[in-house]
Image 1 (spheres, rainbow, N blue to C red):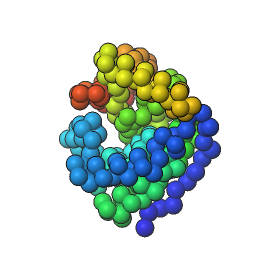
Image 2: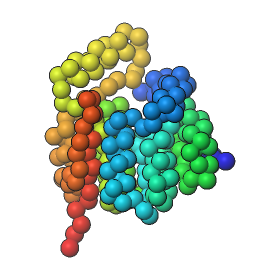
Image 3: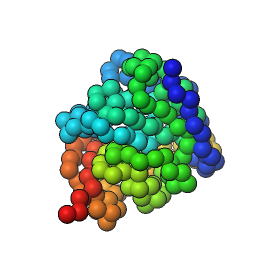
Length: 223
């Protein structure tokens, strides 16, 4: 049986449950069962497995159905916690956990990580796969991630391409016309690097798909 989810206070400004709803997760699970992890998630997974994840504890921010962090636990990580602001994420994660391995040391918490109001525990690895672009306050989000990681942070963000920025603008215009609050934010990769660098994290891996830039950062160990 899946562990019961915990719930924290949600912000009303983003409509995550409306954007990432039951239909979204049904489609995601269907795609996962057919094709496996999405391309950018697979890059993160493959690198972390090759890096060595035995005994690592994982916090995934914006974890959705939890496929990435659950597969990492299934491949040797010690435990994982997924945090997602959509109430539909927990139901999808429970279903997926039963399919992968019901005994996995993994759970999902419904909450909005970017608020920084809750300490989710101590982790050696924080993952933010396709979640940074959901939040306007880059600095607060990344600082919260930094506070939760003692070793690695793995991210994927939209690449800095004109057509991606135009696409995000058009999507946001439609969201506005439909009076929905959710927006896409294409943050500067240089700004992301700067925030991590200023907090003693350095790049150790980078790759990309057609849409996503994948980067893994590691904390600089003091002598």
